[in-house]
Image 1 (cartoon, helix red, strand yellow):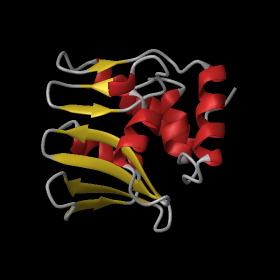
Image 2: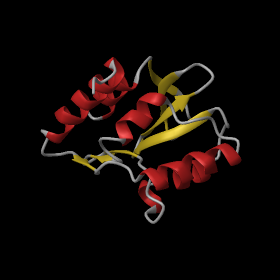
Image 3: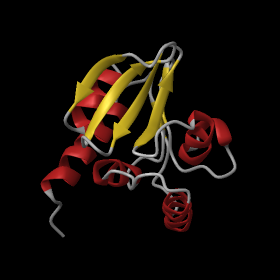
Image 4: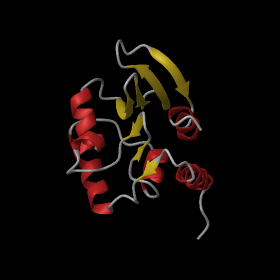
Length: 142
């Protein structure tokens, strides 16, 4: 089976993350839980999960470092679950909260099809990335 270019990039990012002793990656997402997550987000009128993020979940369901987290699909672990995080975030339906640090949030802006780092304090825009690869390099300091 040949990987699509995007999947190969995601797999390479996960490989890089796994070599960092300060980063913990979850195992591949449970397909049933992912299906329920996607359905719930659709029912609640959130935007669809971006394709790159879905590809990432097939290799690493959630990623955590000493100061940053990228949410996964964890129905029984609200602090790390993308659904619970977005319910708490409760902002715009075209913006999905993907991760959090003490200072910033990482969101996917479905309308602009980009990844944005915003300040936790006032939601001011700090960084914009065209793809998940660049966003993750920034987010986890790679």
